[in-house]
Image 1: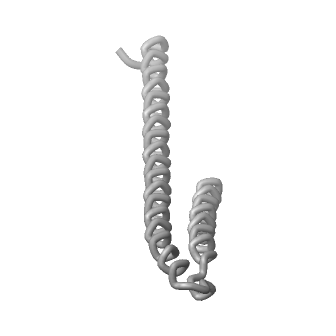
Image 2: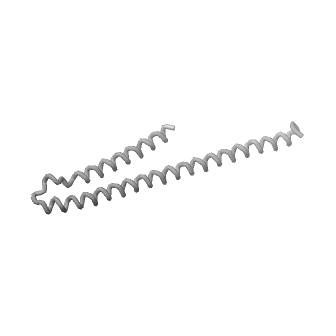
Image 3: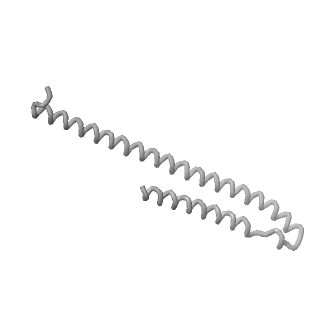
Length: 105
């Protein structure tokens, strides 16, 4: 149980750090430092491009997280089916044992 919690907290920290890195890189180009108008106009068009990049990266992160959740649910389902099959085999063996011992007809 603690292993699952530590894995979730690790994924949360990775997600948080990637978002922080994106924000830091987006803040790196400060328009207040521009010296002429053309440079400021060029920056405004690149900020739209930066916004698009951030949106694409966020969508990529969401897709990776969704895929990870899907794989985790699939893994859980597989483990549950394996445990169910083991349980059924256990009871089948008990039935055969009872028949061999003559406890049940």
